[in-house]
Length: 153
Image (cartoon, rainbow, N blue to C red; front, side, top):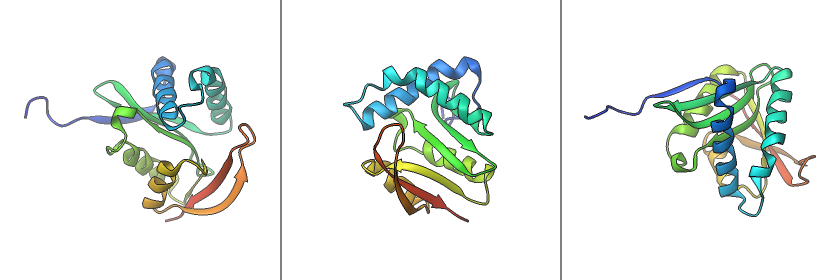
């Protein structure tokens, strides 16, 4: 087999990864919500990641052959999973599952996340992987209705 199977590596996000990671984030969110200009939210995203890291979260990327194809921000101590994003051309592959498996490894006692109530694709993904809706709220930044979802082993 020429080139062999894809080699995925999950590793901590480094400063040099930021632009490429933001490109993945913007494209993934833009595909889900075309009416919102996520490119204009790059600065907010950088600030959000820094804020989460100051409170104990870890930012990880998944790369294939050096190309970043996904990312997540997770707090292993609390189990809070802030984001999983996957490059649009890798959605439907195993990339999200690999990130979720790493999140479960880092926080084996359980995971919690918030998801927009109108993000059916994400909700179906999380439910398929054992998450349950445990509450409803409103995102304080966007005003969008959200679900709290939890996974417990």
